[in-house]
Image (cartoon, rainbow, N blue to C red):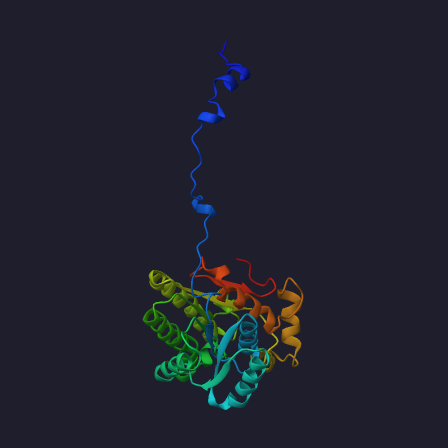
Length: 300
């Protein structure tokens, strides 16, 4: 028969509260606060590339609402739209200025970062949002098609990440790098194969930069929008319709009905709210991640 000690005996054998070791006056590690000094404690600045319209514009406006001063970047052809975004940001009480630069050109990106620091102060956040898309079958692609897609979508992100990171390291301050991926960085869409490949590369660059920048307290993440009601997706819808015979608007409607769990096309603000989180101190312990915002097309 097993021997059991009565519960009363165990209680009586326990040490009295007066002789228990006292808790340390220092708060436990999980109760202490660790704050990144550059975020929310000083003037915050961000460069948002491709921000004259669409998702980039929504990101620039949201970050301005969050308290950022913004460098609104786009190509020279979109300068008037960039100036309009700057006007909206100033209406929110934040400082902003437009700067025309092609992200595929490293020299222009270096000048962009230099101008932002000169105009707004130390750089805290780089949002490498600029990108292009093209609807074309793989076997119809030319060498120039492939080169241009990767020049903007891959080299453009690399140019922004590397130049901004060097500036942050020079400043000796933590920072945040964000890149525009896509749901096609997880599963390609037909007739968007080279675009898909470029966005897979953005995921890879983001992970590689996250590993190497961690020692500098620079986090690197990407956001992956789904089907968004922007000029880019209007073009994709139109070009896919030419290939499949669908009427304008029918392809997006079909994708929305068949693919999106939440049953509606995304709007730019769906994406900008996630980017806002990735730019905030609340994401300080995240790096190397690509966050999907697609209403439930891709489940990770």
